[in-house]
Each structure stands twice: as C-alpha cells, then as structure tokens.
Image (tube, rainbow, N blue to C red):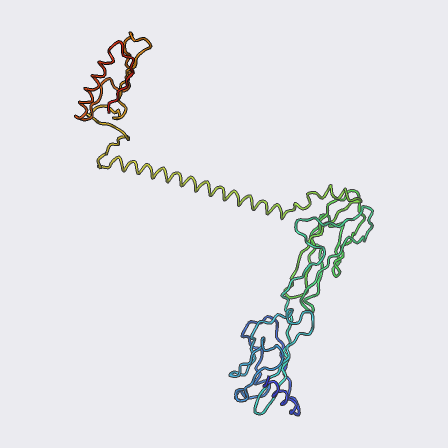
Length: 372
C-alpha cells in the first residue's frame, strides 16, 4: 500500500506520460515465450532497467506477463486463454505499465490477444438427448419450402473464427430436405407424398470459418405423418441406430473373449493339477522309505490274535420260567474268554463256583458274568 501511494504521488508530479508501446500476440502461447524487447522498443538501456528497478504495475497483467530485467524483454508468465480472459469482448487486450525509479518514469504497455480457432461449434438445438427420441413432425400435406426445424449453434471464438455455416451431410431422402447455408433452417424442397417413409434422419454438419476449420455434427429426426399414433408405431425402434448396434457388438465380443480366457485358464489349471499329482505318485512309488502300517483305534493284538477290544468279552446265563428247565447261555464275541493278565485267575475260579450254584434246579437266579 505504501508503494502504491508513493507511486500515485509520483504520477501526479509527472508533467507528461512517455510514449506507449503495443504488442500483438496469439492466445495460448507457451509459458516463457517472448512477447517483445521492451528495452529496445522504449529506447532504454538494460542498465537503466536494473538501476531503476523496473517492474510491471497496475491491473492483473502481472499474472500473465513478466519482465526480465537482465535481458530487457517481456515474457509469457502464464498461458493466456482469450475466451476465459475477455469472453466475447473484442478487442481483447492487456493494459499495464512499466515503472522505473530514480527518477520515476512510467511506460504504458498494451498487449493485444489475437483469437485462435481453438473451439469447435456447440449445437444448442436440437438437443442431443442420448437414447431418448426427439423427432420433428412434418404433415403429408406440407408444401414446398415447409420449415421443418432450425439448427442453432454457437462458437465461443471471435471474429471470422465464429462464423458458422451449415451443410447437409447425409439424409434418408436427400431429394426431400435442404439446409440453409447461413441460418441452419431445414426446409422441404418438394411436395411430400404418401410414398415417402415415415422415418427420416438428417445429419447436419456445422463448420466455423477458422483455419483450420472445426466442425460439429447433429442428427435430426423427422417424422412424416399426420397423426401422433402413427409416429409412435413407426418410431419404436428408431433409437436402435448404428451406434447402439456397434456398442452391442463390442460388448458381445468382449464377453466372448473373457469367457474364452477363463475357460482356457481353468483348463490349464486342471491339467497342471493332474500332472502334479501324477508326478507325486511316481515319486512315492520309486521312493525307498519304509512303509509304516496303520492300525485303527482300539485295535487289540493281545496274544497276537484277534481284533476284539478288551471290554466287550462277556457271558450271559439266564433261566426260563420253569425251575426244572436247563439254563440257557448266551455268548457274544468269542467262545473262549480272553485272559488279560495273571491276576484274573481268581476271577475265573469265582465264575466256576457261581456256575455250579446256577446248575441247581431250585435256583431262580439270573446271573451275568463279565470278564475284563
């Protein structure tokens, strides 16, 4: 703020403003590009720029232009977009001053920004609404010159770069419609007949006047019919155009490729697993390592014979209803009682004594004897 106040006072004290220098540059020049040799154009020595602490003053130009005091030149500090800087205002220019001290001097500088044809035309109408159907209706009683619709487009460039022209690129029936070169109006050029197809599609190209020119294409759907139900019956499949079919074909091919890749991958994995297992079996077959037998749980090798567990050998003796009948013995497991250790001798003697008691005819007892 102090510098600005001092500079303002210095400006008031100046009796006159020195000569003005102007430059003209195209927009979007690369950063660091040369604008002009300000020392030479102002008739100043580079030493004067250094000693006077030359700098750019006023406005927002300092963010686009920089002063190199060592060389005495102006350079592009930031790429300039004319449309973002000035919009549709013409001419578009940067205004600033070169300020020097001891003594105070001001040199007005103007840099004109030339428009480049860097923007394509933008179609405003008819609106391209993706997959939804938008059609203009033309009655079959339409005469020659009937206005169907108008293509509206704009170009954000300026000057001749923004001049637009309209051309009919292709149509279902080129003998039925025409497009105005300057205004984009679509009109009939002959009488509509009953033989004309209900569905009509026009492709209109919008070009600007730049060098090189840029263009945009808009599709216009036209329905030749006298009633709305007739349009609906004929336009049910209108949205399934070539672009949709191309996308569908692409996705089908992509899906086929993915499925084929997965199938081949699974096949390779299965074959690899089979080969791995076969190699493992061959390695075990040729191996010289001893084979350790496996015995199931509760396997008994007592006395070297049999597989019966110790706890399941028992005898059952029971009587019938009559005391005079003989005892009936039921046996499970082996017919012989397995003797597990020498201490079981007493048990066997007790069993024999109990058996003799049961042999008496008056004995109603039913005894179960277990041997472990």
